[in-house]
Length: 107
Image 1 (cartoon, rainbow, N blue to C red):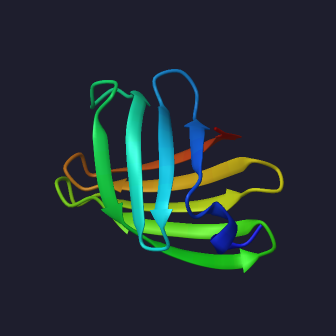
Image 2 (spheres, rainbow, N blue to C red; image 1 turned 60 degrees about the vertical axis):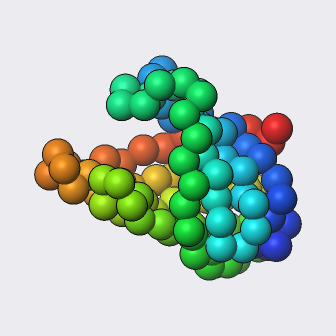
Image 3 (cartoon, rainbow, N blue to C red; image 1 turned 135 degrees about the vertical axis):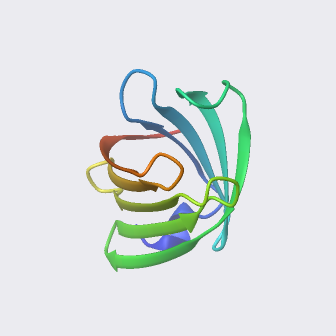
């Protein structure tokens, strides 16, 4: 699956209890994230991000963005062959670094 194949599609990213998000790849540079479960945002909260998608190999993409409000940086390495996301988030306000691994579930 190339970066082109995810555009226009929606996936549930399940990082475990309290950490679930629906990602809709609007186009090659825009992502809409709807909170399903999160410790900071209410369910149903929708965030829009400007993203960059880099194809690493067949079915393997790196997706990056910066959250405007918090200035957090997010890097996903998404394996659409195995349906696994490896996500790293630099939390600027909390001075923390989070490493997540979760399931990608096509919607």
